[in-house]
Length: 246
Image (cartoon, rainbow, N blue to C red; front, side, top):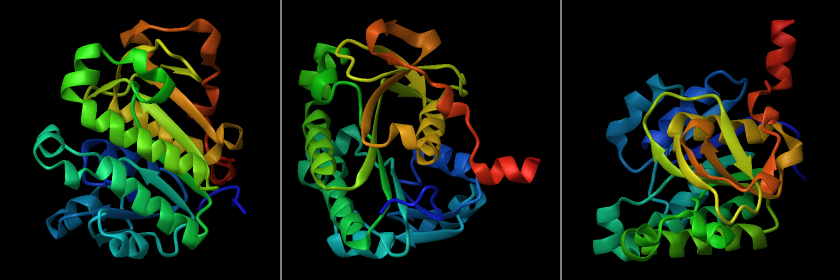
């Protein structure tokens, strides 16, 4: 059974650019944070960014996935393969098998909520990704992320799937457009905004078992107004924070 609020969160892909933004967001929450990375060299910097624990492992190794998630009740998955890895070593793509390994481990551990960073262009949002990117540059990522999404939907876990547009390293805008089931949403979004949305979803029961497309309002190129949803939950604080501020 899903806990209303997490007590210990695993951040997969914590040493990546989005992962570090997630650590910053979690540092403002009353929750224990375990960061997963493939390199022990990242230990000090991850602690500096807010991790309470750091575990070294490879998500493509099922045993590492099981060890990483032990004792956690929520997962924020922000790991992703580079373009070079996807094109030259498709068997090392974490977007597919890495997610599947962690989903299997999460089911066995009884994890409450699994939040997955996917991408616009996956599933029914396919038309939101430019054709050249979908068919030439990112065809491997789309395929693997579709496998991952489907596995999460079939896992029985409570989930939230976030499909951001093209991500950049700009400062957070704090103003995002969130759609559900949009086939045409196109645009970009800072990683910091994506991180805030992913963390906020752990504290918003109304978004559980839903899939969202998201772009920054200022960078939106195309939207489908009927599919837009209220985004006020992204700005909500957790009850623990509210009580401490009272």
